[in-house]
Length: 166
Image (cartoon, rainbow, N blue to C red; front, side, top):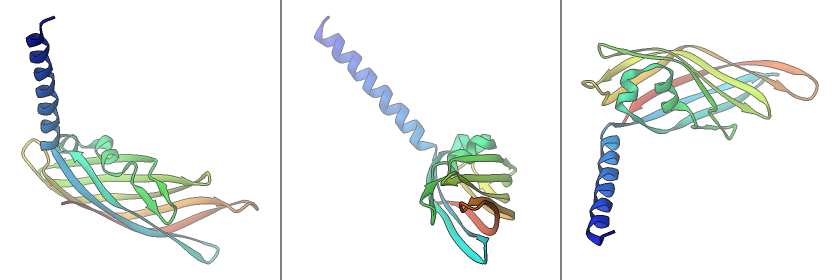
C-alpha cells in the first residue's frame, strides 16, 4: 500500500469520527434531576434523594416514551441508600410544548424493592429536536418492602420530583 493512500483513509476516518461526535453533542440537552422523599415504617422515616445531571439527545426527548425517561433517570445515584436507579418505566409525552405522562423509578437495597411513581407535567421547546425541558411530578405513589429478618413489612412514603434542563 502507498503511504498517501493510508494517510488519506486515516484522515477520512478521523473526520467521520469527529463529525459524528459533533452531531451527537449538538443534540444534547443537560437535564438536572431533583427527587427527594422518605419511606416510613415502624414509626421511623428513611430519607432518600435522587439528584444528578443527565445528558440526553434532543431527538430522544422529542420521540418521548420510556426510552426518554430511561435516558434521564437510569443510573442516577439514590442518596441515603447509596444505590443506583435500576429500572425506569412509564411514558413521556411531548405535544405542542406540553410535557405529560407517568414515570416509575425502581431500585433495590439488600434485595428489598423501593419505588417512586408519579404523573408528570411541564413544558418543552425546540423545533424537531427538544432543546429545553422542564417537568414536575404529582400524584405520588412511594412504596417498598423491607425484610428485617422477622418478616417483610410494607413501606409507604412521600416524594417530590423536579426535572429541568440547564
